[in-house]
Image (cartoon, rainbow, N blue to C red; front, side):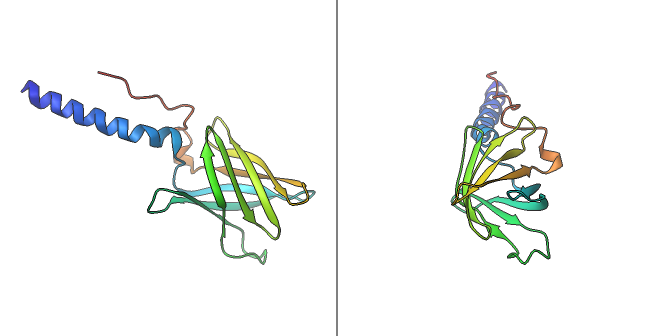
Length: 144
């Protein structure tokens, strides 16, 4: 009986430890909301589709509102997410390079700069149900 309990405990701990990097490193997948505020213009609402490819690489597509004359989705390129910083580039009529910082609620906010150095602001907000568990609020698994 004790061997069975120890096996379940070991298996459970292994699963928690395997999942732990995802809690602290990965972004929640799904449709995020947010805004894009070009320089000297009013911001507009957008959506972001956050996913991972078959190799585990992060993918984010910006979904602009209908009627802007923009493509249905705009992929972010050269994505990197490390230590609460999300960096990427994309083409929104001009080449943009962005660096967003993760906020306490799990959202991201930061500047996107065009080739001339003019900044705009981009905000990404995770789905409502996922805002409570952020890398900064997650606790590592405890040893038995």
